[in-house]
Image (cartoon, rainbow, N blue to C red; front, side, top):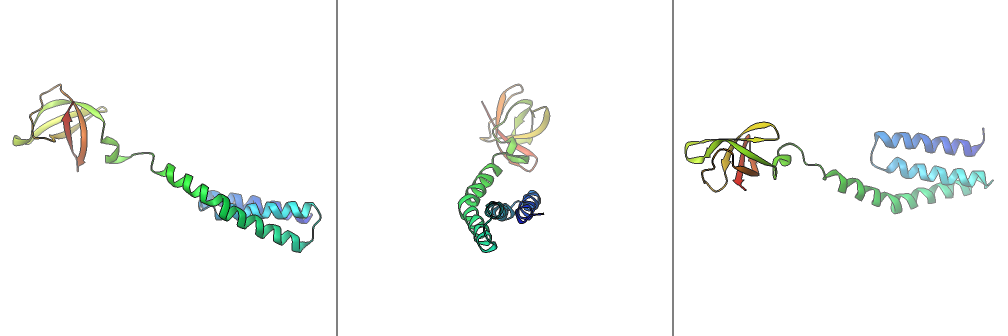
Amino acid sequence: MEIWHIWIMAGLILLMVEIFVPTFLPLCVAFGCFAAALASGLDFSLKIQLVAFSTGTLISFFGIRPFLLHYARSKGDAVKTNAEALVGQKGWVTERINNAVNEGRIKLSGDDWRAESADNQIIEVGTPVEVLKVNSTILVVKSI
């Protein structure tokens, strides 16, 4: 087994580690291993291989990692879940909404929800509404 094989295997192992540790640090070291494997494949000395390893790692750490972190963070906020996902959705009134007597229900995405009017107006059955915010299990809506 030649030295460049060892560098390649180390790089592949680090790529597998990156799957379980999503910090992009093992990925940067893996790039360094691949740079050292290239140097070894070109029959450079061990000192040159270590310089290639260090240079490849540093270039990937300061050149590639910031872009990957930015991309990963920007995509993390794209999906709204739980109560956030309800805001902005449209439904219709199934039970008259009257805040004064604490009554009102709407149908939203096939589910029945307790609802209140945002402006304290009475909203009649069958009126389309839009969810403005969520208070616990009560949806605050306005007619549209």
